[in-house]
Amino acid sequence: MLRTIRLFALLLALLLGGIWAYAWATRAPGEGLAEAFAARLALLFGGEMPVPSAGGGIQLAQGVSLGGPFNLVDQTGRAVTERDFAGRWMLVFFGYSFCPDVCPTELATMTAAVDAMGPAGEQVEPVFITVDPERDTPEHLANYVALFHPRLRGLTGTPEQIAEVARRYRVYYARAHRPDMGDYLMDHSSFIYLVGPDGRVRTLFRPEAKPEDIAAAVAAQLRGATRGARAAKEHFAAG
Figure 1 (cartoon, rainbow, N blue to C red):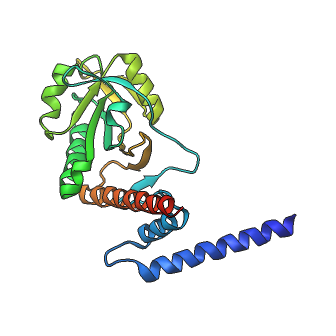
Figure 2: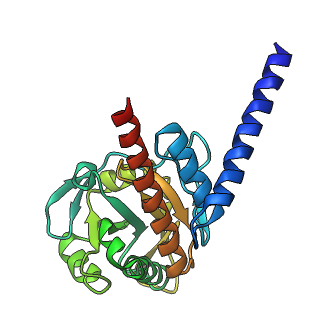
């Protein structure tokens, strides 16, 4: 039994090594080696493979799943769920409009990344989900998101709805009272999430990531998804 496992591991290592060498030899000009490797794997297995991201992107560990269903309200007052975004890519940031520094900085970064992608950026919807629903009403969010980008969607809801979507994305947030301030602030995590067409998070970007790096990583994911879909289509057509 042990000998069989060792033989299987050796064969798998040789297979992956061969694909890596093939990716290195056949990658297109400007195509990263990791991106080329993922694309060749997709061609081999006829499915979509995750593309390692650049610029500070964090790939989720095997078996970790973030994202999923939610019930919220957008800045127009319309109820929305994850089904309204089905089939589309999203860049999502959790924060609040009264945030004095981090939130406006990261929202500006996120929307600049979408613009930096050029025409491909039309495939990505920027989304801002508040962690302060008490103050971030739809009317207030409408004015706030308009400051950053015409396509930025602002989402709010009841405290229970916000708690649920934050749980699905594993977002930390808590009200913080400061003695020197009359109002309250919100402590919260500050990652930007790249969400795939299936509603699941593909990559996280650390705070202070550069717009051009995020744009490059998202573009790589889109290209990888396109190649995977094309390979799957050709595979089924051939079968």
